Length: 169
Image (tube, rainbow, N blue to C red; front, top):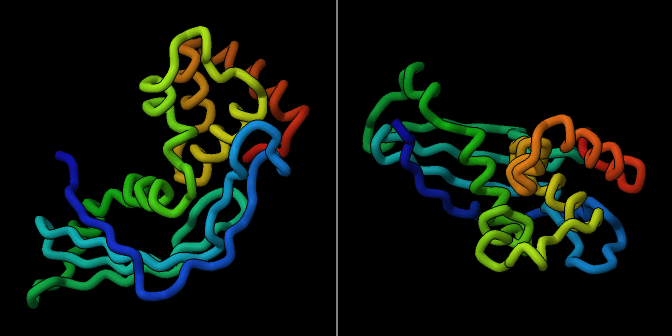
């Protein structure tokens, strides 16, 4: 069962934008992520509100502080905490706070390309891997899905990218 939630930006300004990925970019926008950000996540079906204070640790968005509160007098049960779906929440927050986030997603590229215009240059692929890493995703799987290729071939592509750019570990 998928957990339903709504996300709202917190009442504090986002921190300084940090450049990641190939810097300076040559053909694409610079990938940036806020150093800090505050978000409110409401789970109506669970009767919970979660305050997430996130930081960018140089590799991904991480929770620095989390406050879980019951809505309308509901108390917080331990089983509720297992249903928060935090990785998908952080991924959604990444999509909201990274400028041009959608540009580096497979779904967007599938909608806006034909096979002759497949983006295969190393700069694009390195930034796509960073977007996956920042949002708690799996960069290797993203490349595998993007090219529809096996893990072994993806490993070769990742080695080539690592020789040119600083990539997530």
